[in-house]
Length: 277
Ligand code: PAF
Image 1 (cartoon, helix red, strand yellow):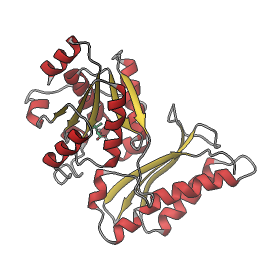
Image 2 (image 1 turned 180 degrees about the vertical axis):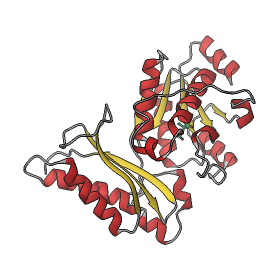
Image 3 (image 1 turned 90 degrees about the horizontal axis):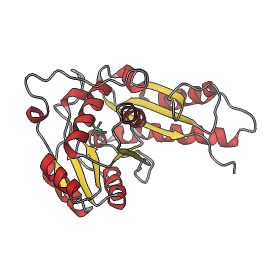
């Protein structure tokens, strides 16, 4: 992969990387589509990264479908699929980790200790191996995107980081490889995340006065509980700093994580401010 990327660089071609863990869905395809518009050579990495999974998480059962993924990527105009195995990425003496300290602390970082160190470490390795000019990520992993932007700036990586909007099923569910785990009633219950976000946006749009984050969060809690899901967090944060906000501003994002059917952990987020209707 490195040699190929170096060769493309020598030819003056602009390289875009779309890092993924595979099990590609329309959300991933939208990232590839964006990458095709931005660069001459598109690399998709597919690597289920053991370093970002906790001991009781779903590393073993994470859905894998490499052949199908390669076909999908090819159809989108991708030039190379890079799918290293864990031994290639983490030799027996591996001991380095990249930690984006503050941004990794709250939200998913609080629920999944060490997760973002695993993400930052593997993304930095993927950047070195594939030498991209631009890298494209989804905004569903809002905290991840902020962490990668911070790492890229802090380490002077000279890579443009592009975030793409969440792609949703027609009924609103944000696309995720983990949606594969949802069966029967769980699929229905999972809609509570996007419904809570929609309700929050409506609350903000319809309010004539300033609205507090607490009001939005209480309503969110209620809706998630009513659906029978288990809320892990609901926060109103500034889109750039990820700091909690007390009142809703143009920069406010509502971010939610909830466990569906007692075990499938899903996340979703959206800007809260809408034009008044
Ligand atoms: O978002 C993902 O799929 C992963 O966290 C990433 C960025 C590919 C790193 O393993």
